[in-house]
Image: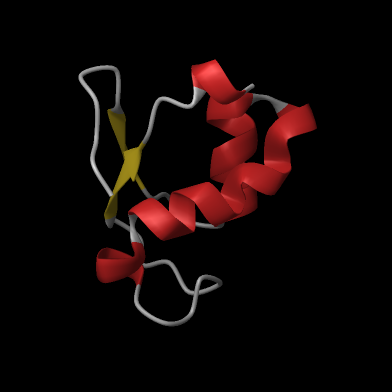
Length: 67
């Protein structure tokens, strides 16, 4: 997937998961966008979207045109 100039990066903190991160960047009503985060970061995360390592840098894509 391609990133745009509006994308950001997030460093995973203890206790975070993709749903929590999606809520932080896209709002609580868009928590289902955890799958978007996973799709953009699949190479970094691997096959288990529920396993994030503290310190992992994740791409936070700009999806504002879809919200």
